[in-house]
Length: 207
Length: 146
Image 1 (cartoon, rainbow over the protein chains, first blue to last red):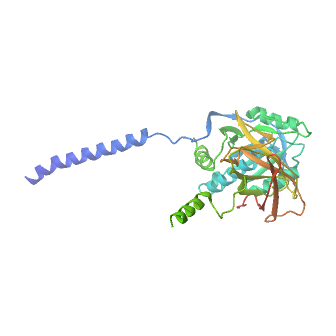
Image 2 (image 1 turned 120 degrees about the horizontal axis):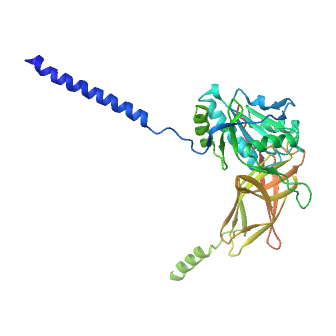
Image 3 (image 1 turned 90 degrees about the vertical axis):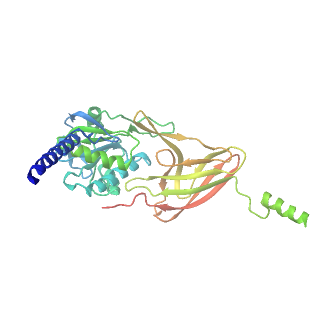
C-alpha cells in the first residue's frame, strides 16, 4: 500500500526537478551578455599597417612591437598640461586595478606623441616615467606618425599661434589594440577610470 | 531697553564689527609641478565674486614662473583643443571654476630651484586696477604607484 503511494510522489518530484533544471538552463542561455559601458567595440578588428617609430629608449617601435599583448594607445604631446596627463593618469590607474584581476592579460599603455619636434625620446621617456609601470612612450618622424594615425582615424594638427610657436590639436580617443596588432575598440572622451576597468576587462575576455 | 534691542538687531543685520569680504576671493587652489621632461604645468582654483557687479579677471603672473596663461580645453567631435582666453568673467555673487578638462591656468618655465612643497605666489589682476595676491604650495601632479 505504501509503495503504491510513494511511486506517484517520486514521479512528481522527478518531473519537478527536471523542469527546474531545464528552466535554469534556459535562463542561463538567454541572459543578456555583459556590454561595454563606454567603449565602441569593432565587429571585426582592423589590422594596423606597418610603421617605424621609436620608443623612449630609442629602440625601434614597429607594428610587431604591438604583437603579443593588449595595448591601450593614446595620442598626445608632453606640452599639454591638462587632458593628456589626465588621460594617461586615468589609464595608469585603470591598469593598476586590472592588474589585481587578471595579470596574465594586463594591457600596456602606449603614448604616441604627435609633437615630434619637441617630444624627443629623452623627453617622452622622462614624461612616461611619471605614470608608473607599463607605459611605453613613442615618437618619431612626422611622416611615420601619420602612417599610424591615418590608419587609426586619429586627427592631429599643429596650427601656429599669433605670437609664435604653435598649438597641438589631437583626437582624445583611447584605442584598444589586440595582441595581433589590430584595432579592437575605441574609447571616446571624456574618460573615466571605472569605464576603462569594466570595458577593458570585457574586451580582453573576448567581448 | 527697546532701543538697545533694536540697535543689536540692526548691527546683526549690517554685520557690524565684522571684516568686509574682498570683492574677489580665490579658494581650492591646486597648483602642480611640471611633469618630468616638461617645463609647463597647470593650476586649478575657484574664484568667487562677492559683489553686485561682474568682475573680469584679466591677467595672471607669478615670480616663480616666467608666464601664466588662461586656457580652456575643448573637445569637439572627439578632438581636443586648447584655446587661450584673454579674460575670465565672474558674475555677481557667483563663482568661476578652473578645473580638469575645462578652463585652467598654464604655468610656463618655472624657476630652476622651484621644488614640490615650495610656496608659489600668484598675482591676479582684475577690474580696472584690482590685484589679488595669493599663495599656494607647489604639489606633485600624480602619486606614482608601482
